[in-house]
Image (cartoon, rainbow, N blue to C red; front, top):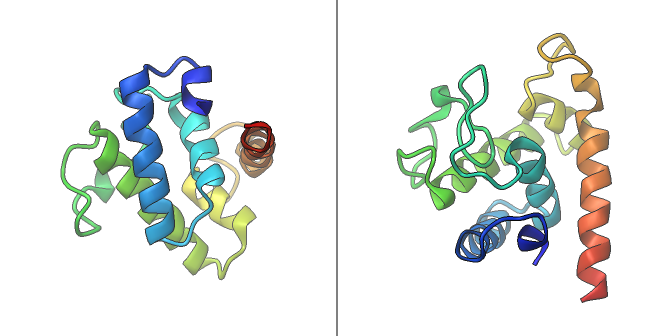
Length: 140
């Protein structure tokens, strides 16, 4: 419902929701956090491409293609892109020993705060959207 409420077509929303839950569980991630990242990165558009070449729902950079087994090769495929995005996010969480803020900055490419203007605000944006998603879920 959260995806459809934001204009994602029903069929795509179902595929995304299933992939988010499945991959979040497999990587010990919060599905609301994954959904928040996905919405920030692509607004639910599986064909999204950034000016730097990041692809798909979770805006995965091509350099990650093939890095995680079982994620496939099509960065625009709903399930495969979410597999990559959650794998990358989980990797950053492990790398930064559970520090979610640093993991989000890493995921966003904001390691030194210079890649994207105001990128240091990315974790706060994720938290705000996640809070809204959780509130939606509690109402249903």
